[in-house]
Amino acid sequence: MAEGDFGAVGLGAVQAAVPWFEGRSDVARVRADVAALAGSPRGGGHHSEEMAAAQDYVAASLQEAGWQVTHAPFERRWVVGVSDAGGRQVLPRRVFRRSAGVNLLADLPAPVGVRPSARVLIVAHLDSVACSPGADDNASGVAALLECARLLAGLPQAPPVRLAVVDLEERGSVGSRVLAGQEEFTEGLEVVVALEAVGTFLDAPGTQQLGGLGLLFPGLARQVRARQSRGDFLLAVHRSSTTPAARALQAAAAGLRAPLPVLTVRDPRSDGWKGRAATLAMPWLANLDRSDHAPFWRAGVPAMMVTATAPFRSRHYHQPGDRPENLDYPRLTAVAIVVAAWAATRQATAFSPTAAGE
Image 1: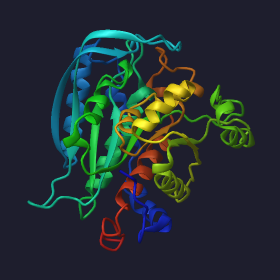
Image 2: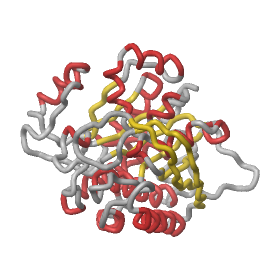
Image 3: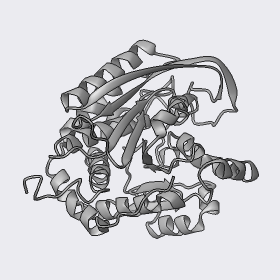
């Protein structure tokens, strides 16, 4: 599948839609979501009661916004993954005898018999590592998804968008691997956007690191150096199949009252089996796979990760200090606005300020 272009919509229309969503967003609401989710660690393999409470909160929030929520439990045996204990060190692969969790799927009601001609999936993982309350990683992504849900539900016509709040990402994107492996789920999907650690923004020079990414992508390194290595931007990790989506996000972010810089990096691999083969030849590129977009890449579905770069910026990554008070809520809310505007304008008939009451 190839991610379609914007046709009659155009990047200008994406940018023009932003004020409508910006006027309906609520920073305090986003802050409250993070506070409710990140009071303690949560995960299917640890802190299971806290995880269940967080799932109840997410489901209730989506239902209150008008979305229909489905609980999709799963169980996998002998999963090859990574430790979800926490810490900044990337640990070797290990095998889990049993991995069980619950994905939450949400759709807006549609007229009977009507199936959207294109579908967007916005996904964020709810679990944290065992030693961290996970405010940035990844209550921030879930809070941005919830705000997207509220904004999109306010449209007069339901956009072709599905939401997924997934489990066991910290164990190796297990929940999203389950979804990407279900042909009935991926059928009709044009593009997937994963929201991963989108709450940390730092304006001081020298707060942004790139590690090996700077060597792999010198163009990105030049852009970061030109910004005095400030951690004040959003990064879209995409492939050629999602280049239009990355450009549209940039256009939307430029239309905010306080523009949010969006830098992009294009993974040179192809979607599907060719990309999997390229990873074997170039294993260092697997560092771009560390979130819920990667299983869809491997399944041949165009996907993109939107992130504030997690360990390359946040000193609290996978640590007890990843707490709600350390996030930047105006810019986290801006992430939700940008993604909602992008999702709503993928089809020419999906959104217009006039039809929406402007």
